Image (cartoon, rainbow, N blue to C red; front, side, top):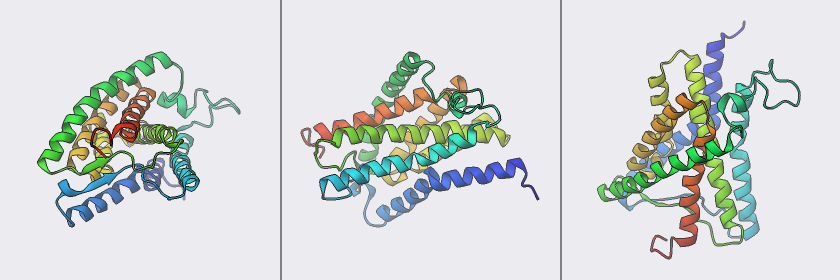
Length: 259
């Protein structure tokens, strides 16, 4: 018996989320509960980009493996979104290509870069204010963007990590989910709301402030995507935000009393 297309697609979405950001959301909720039952959130700490070994080159290996394997669900999503009937062998940018469908390509590099830079600036500055407010209200943990030791490879790895986050989150949470939610027959506002709540939920381990901030960011990014049908500016903006946070903290955090 053939599984109806819509039911098969729902199963596909659950599999993708179970392998990627849905799994992160579940862990994030558990981590939040763990922190809240230990001490007030204001006393908690959330460390991103943790060191995984005290031995330099093993740590480097673990970091690179994490980045590579985190991109596998993105490859799966791109495979699911590709219309294989329209793609000739060797033609990754053909009419059925997922890269073209999502606008995840280099068709307009200048315009995408400018839009990404503008988005990063418009999101980044309010995010700092929201973080400060969350800390003052006691609903946000102290966030340490980088826990890596200072090696020659630390900054390149942090840049790669930031790019990884931009690709994984924007391709899956915006491009892929909005496509699938649309095929489920959901309205655009509902699709944007669910996508944005998911984005907020896998940041809950940092506290309620980051949940709110990332959910709002999700609404803005998803709304822009419904207008442009291009995920590349969102990837660029997200990567820039994380690069500034990760690398800035790694280079200057201790100097300004943040480390």
